[in-house]
Amino acid sequence: MATIGTPLAKKLRPNYLRVRLAPGGAEVCRLHNTLEGLLAIQETRFLYDLAKDARSVVEIGSFRGKSCVLMLEGANARGNTDVRITCIDPHEPTHFGTFKDEDHDAFESTIARHGFTDRVNHLRMYSHDARQEWDGSPIDVLWVDGDHSYEGAKTDFVDWAPLVRSGGVVAAHDTYRERFPGCLKAWNEIIDASDDWGPTQRCRTIAWAIKR
Image (tube, rainbow, N blue to C red; front, side, top):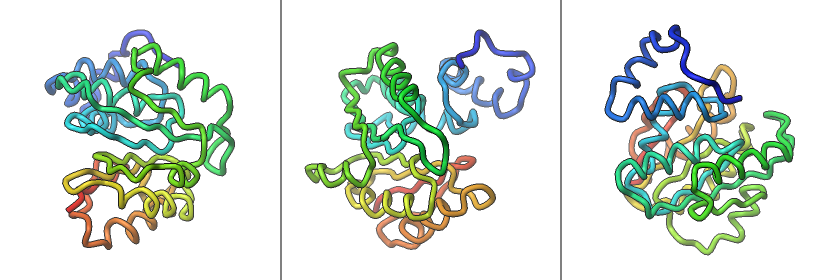
C-alpha cells in the first residue's frame, strides 16, 4: 500500500538517510515509499541506478511493478529514454507466494501511472516459456527476482544469462542463505563459478556481476 509522507523514524535510519542525502536521493526515497514491493532502501537505490546506460533489459519476476519503474525512472534521470524492459511474470501462485490477477492488474496500473506503458513489454508467462519465444537478441541487464527455488533460479540463469552482452550486468534478488538458499546455490553454480562473469558483488540481498 502506498504511504503518504515519510515517518521521522524512517528518515533518521542511517541507511535511509545515506540514500536520501546522495544525489537524486529525495526522488529515490519518494519512489521507495510509494511503490509496492519488498526492497531495502539500498536495493531501491541499486535498481534506480541499474539501467542508467542500458537499452535492453529483461526482468524476471515483476510483482506490482516497483523494480521496473525504478529502473526506468533512474534511466530517465540520466537522460536515457531509449531503454526498454521486457517484464516476465505469470502472476500465478508459487511456493514463494500467493500471486494472482490482482498483482497483474496492479502491475499494469503502476506502469501506466508512471507513463511507461510504451517502454515495457509485459509477458504474462513463465520465464522458460518466454525464453523459447525470444529472438536471441542480446540484452544489457538481466534482473532476476522470480521463482525462488533452486530449480527455478537455476533455470532462469541458464536460460537468460548467456544473452547478456559483454559489459552487461546480471543481478538477482534474495541470494542469501538464511531464507532462500536455493537462489544462492543457483547463483554460485551458474554465475559465480563461471569465467564468463566478473567477481560477484553485493548490495544487501542482491548479488550482481558484470559479463566479461
